[in-house]
Length: 486
Image (cartoon, rainbow, N blue to C red; front, side, top):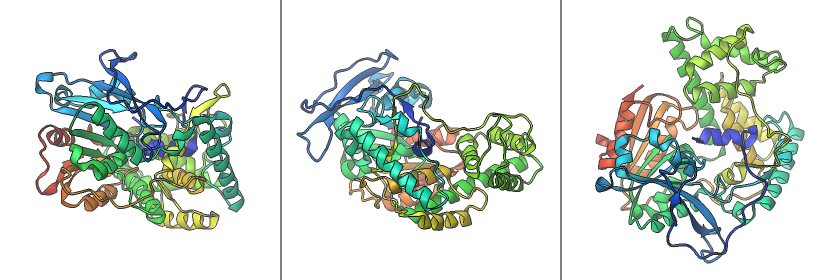
């Protein structure tokens, strides 16, 4: 699954998807009322099809493109409830339905729902964004030291945006989450369903929220796991994300204090970590697992975030920190990648991600001010590295966002929405779920997993049961909240 944090990390860390070298043109065919299904090539137990939807929903009679869709039919048709549309974080939904869906969802969900996913526009087989691999190989690091570095990052963004737009075509201008929500309703209509149920995870919670705003009466149920709050302006967004990363690191330290399996058990984890960050600042933190590699403070924060706190894979993170401190061999770290020299084009997330966020960082002076505020709430982690990369990219991205942040306005008559979130999520912190629940008012319930990591449906029997009871039987927690122990 491609979650919100990994999507953000991909924006400026080279973790981009390799694609072919020819962009898919938009079609001018009429909007198709049905989907022609056929067995998927990768999994013939699943049906695949294409639905033609408008490139620009403001011009529904204009050019269209093919939206790739996949359907895993209910295992027990006689007990079928309906369609459960899924978006588990912005990646190709057709791949999820053909693969992970069978192990991700409970047997009862698979028995009673047609599980349907689609590749969001700009992703996978739905007119994917194409960008020059040569340009991506020249991406600056998301840590500008002065205004000159900041200006170089801005010039790079201008070059990349123009290249991606040229290679991808007009769909590159319409990749926002509102357009995704309208695509979802087109899928609902093409399936002949009056209402649908929806399960979104991480980045997939954003189009879900917009769907509830636009098409609340077409919803049967909606569960949102690891919830993104799309109402936060630049400063509060950066500070809250840094606080989430700090909270997750401290939760890791508490685990080490009580679990003898931790490679740092009996040590003061925060002090060990601060020592590594100080060495990184001096340029003397060498990677025992990769000869010649010297880690920066940003590299170290990225390793902790993606390599341990997101999972959470605490054992790996403890062993990695112990290895870095001692210089002895240990597990391999998280290394930013770049497309290889043989790759001509890649699928880059920035053109889509930056259409949903207006993040104001006009110069290095403002960036330094934000960094100081983040460091005050996160003295050990200093930043949330994915958010730092994402915010800087979108701040200098030379395209006006189509769907900037706003508070949710879900219409009366929308069914109750279930939110589930970990207490110590470094990517979409618990405060984000609380904020979204507050915006939804009485129409939302919140299930809190008293543990760590990103994505909680599969964490415990309690979290799975809460989501399943809601999707299958429309049962929401008493008094709108439930706690599941970690």
